[in-house]
Image (tube, rainbow, N blue to C red):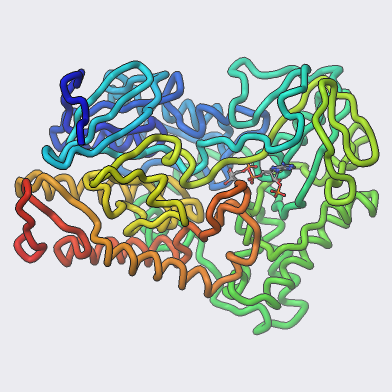
Length: 548
Ligand code: NA7
């Protein structure tokens, strides 16, 4: 393959794509190993997901004291979260603080998009081309591109016709938006829509919510964090984090060891009530251990959640439209503040697209089967081409000229969610086949970055020039991930976990469902066994792992 190497503008040890939680920590770890690196970042500053998703109400759905790095005593000592669930601006400030503490920005190139990355089999290097016109040669390529970073394009007739103020939750204007006096429409009731709706309703003259599928949402019970509580958490932080690392969801809260029907009806209600009162994403899912696996057990939690919606929402027709019917938890459960309560406001109308579908977006609003709705502003909260979208947006060409997009045509295949057979020296952070989006992302990210740094250290210290997942190990891992998912209710829902929100995307359940702790143990065992399932090579000479 001719990589056009004559016009290489720079030679580095590693290129890291993305300056969110993953990319920043990767840069720190690779610098510690003495590597010369550059981070290429599309956004104008650090933050990744938290740089782009500035919509009103955007906040984390994991407790902020757990949604942070654990590797640095200095960061732990100097940073204090102010709320149970941090807002987007606070998380962005945190990442700014991290970048400043470690002087990271000197190695980050902002407002630059990676367009392609091609592997040179003769040199065991990647050639990375950016929108800035750079052509960087690097031994290692780390795709820290995020799982929810490639926005889904609105697939609605007439979407390009609207002449009012068109907004996307994933590309919100930096200076915010004033909806005062405006007729506003919002399409989408996933996590983003559910967080934004109550705040937009507070400001708009009228808000129309266009809902295709109702979602389960748990009350956040957000509150300021008491200084005493923070100090208590910090006093025992390492133990708390180690519990998270070995847990299913990457959080320190113990899941139940009881099955749904092991307890009386009264006890079950009381346990659900206690969860609802406590709030947070696992309000109901942590009550019983068969929540994700037993259809009848799951129905008990569904019934409880639907009853809550009916209690909160005054109009019974609206309450019914807002009541989801899918297995709870199989689409990402949302976390809200006053979401269902918002439908009791005079200035909010729910448009149920199942009975009254959108026919088209017009220059002045939205036409549904039954009416024309005039709008000043239209907000799209329609989600992302999740997990694989940001990778497939780059023209990644591996060994033998194979494109990643083509290799993944029937769905993504990886070994451990970390590497792809045929794409040597390219690491994925929280890729498909790892717990990623089902877990506390920061815990999963730290684990992946540490694993990748360990692998690179291993290669460099033994003068290997190439690491690649074997196709056998990858096939076995994919089969294992699928088998685990089939043992749960997850694949039964149409969700972005499965790729079913994107027309034409292969339907493959992408995350590893067996929990962060089990996954971590598998990754550790692979390393202990001399990078089992990976081929480590020096030039064209293939060294068996036993020699490693
Ligand atoms: P989600 O969870 O994918 O939600 C997208 C929403 O947009 C969902 O309600 C979709 O309905 C709706 N949607 C998408 N396309 C359409 C069309 N064409 N017409 C009507 N409605 C549509 O994305 P979010 O940004 O809210 O959340 C993503 C993740 O970020 C979240 O899970 C957290 O982990 C953080 P559908 O369900 O497809 O019927």
